[in-house]
Amino acid sequence: MEIGKVPETVLNRSVFKQLSVSREEVLVGPAIGEDCSVVAIGADEVFVLSTDPITGTAKGIGSLAVHITVNDLAASGAEPIGLLVTALLPPGYEEEALKRMMRDLNEACAPLDVQVIGGHTEVTSAVNQPVLSVTGVGKARRDKVVAGSRMRPGDQIVMSKWGGIEGTAILANEREEELKAYLNPLFVDQAKELGRHLSVLAESRIALEHGVTAMHDATEGGIFGALWEMAEAAQVGLDIHLEKIPLKQETIEIANYFDINPYQLISSGSMLMATRDGEGLVEKLEAAGIPASVVGKAVEGQGRIVHQEDSIRSLEPAKADALYKALGKK
Image 1 (cartoon, rainbow, N blue to C red):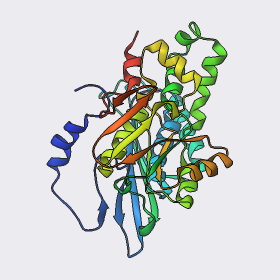
Image 2: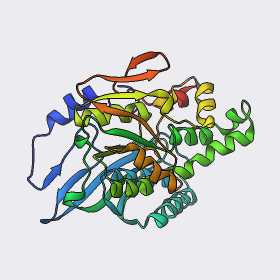
Image 3: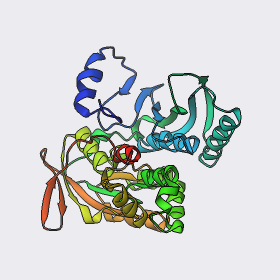
């Protein structure tokens, strides 16, 4: 199999179909397009849980791990509480580097009011660079949980910020010298700073107050992958307009350099939100200083299309993220 998230067909055939145990407390379990699992803990409250590894980079992984996991909780309408952190370190990894990683992680937790509640730290020859795997725990009222399957035909799809945020920041950090030989060094420094925009907690809270049927943070597979996963979870079609999907110029230039599709580049920091009133939600987000755009709508049927000027293309299930293609180029 290729590097990255396994394809949807493999996930269904070789993962989901092998799982047969179910419990009545589990309200939302594993499924395409669902960011979290939901477990009832009483008549009115639920625990919301998510887990994610950081494998595409070794730089700034403490902060990345926090934001990616907390974003999943936010997309389900939960209040994040704590994180369980597993750190797998390669032989010879310096203690000072571990200390920096955990400081980075803690600095990301502080403004989100999220506590590290446990974990595991190990040096192992099974990895050749540090790997963080983080499980997030949140809580919510049962009637406030947002599930991906609830998007309906007619819902407008609002996108926050820009596509490819995380991938752009990772590539600017991992390939800094190479990119600075090709692009203006100041431009590359600006691309590195996009890593400051990875949290979607603020927009999730505004969206919940406004009213949404579904939310999904755009991670591996980029904006195209996230749109497909949302539609798959709800079993609806999509009508998307490419020119409405905003990209930073830094993302466009770096994608051109590596010959990758920016719409398939990991996009943590951007939230997709389905709502009956897209323009109203955009207005509220922008009033809070969060760029946003209505990029399309959910429609009846299984057709999932993207308009690009005078042409139409079909949206397809996500393949390997464009980040891995770029990192594989020497």
